[in-house]
Amino acid sequence: FLLRPVVQTYFGESASYVYQKNSQILNLSQTVNGWTMTLTDCVGDDNRLYVGIEVTAPEGTVLTGQGSPLPYGIEEIDIDVSEDAKHPGAWYVNQVPDDSETDNHLRFVLWMNCQGSLDGKALSLTLGKISRGDGTCDFDGSWTFRDIKLDLADQSIRLEPQVSVPILDTTATLTELTISPVSITLYFQGEGLIGQCQRYPNGTNITDPTIVLYDQEGNVMQLESRYAPFGSRAGSGDNNATGELWIVQSYETFIDVEALDHIEICGVTIPVKQ
Image (cartoon, rainbow, N blue to C red; front, top):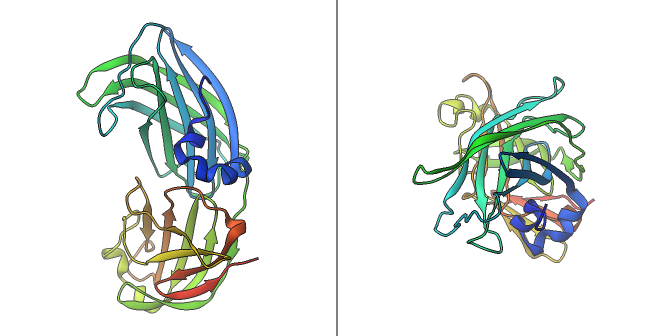
């Protein structure tokens, strides 16, 4: 790749320490009709996989990246995983700013909502049709990357708090809590949650519970984000008789789990320091 790895630059210098411990450099390129796509790097956990993408057009092509939101997108996305892995439940791609708005490079981040870790699994991607928001198509071809072996570091903290938490106008027991540099997962059980899948069906974006993370000095490390694509997801079981609720929440940037001291969920403090 010509510039720095895309996922690294997307999350910024403040996350560089965590990125170095959790990232995988890919540096895989395909050229079609003079257009080159490079998968630069990736970071992921049980719930989310980020893949950095760099596109280089033929010399002399000007790809103007001005505007808000940035105008370019990848319209065709096909994702496949090895037979021993679950297919991602959703995905999204967005353009990332680069150092020049009038050169022949474009950068993107592909987000995938996973259903279990893809560590050690094979990922295949077909990506194509580079177009602008106004419908103009700059490149109508596609690139295919097959059997990318993923080697994702797992720094997750996995706890079984068994504490009562006020949530969704009731009280439920937080039975499982998983915190990684990429996301946080909460699993609740309780009779008061029976029927909640009518209110929050699987995959719903939600605003409850409130989540605050603190470092070992007592400073707020990371508030949850409600603004990133697929920033929060909830599922409440397959039927209305299931008294359970699982919530997946991603962050605006990576967090250093080694510096994490405790977390507050709807005002309930849960120690997580190892």
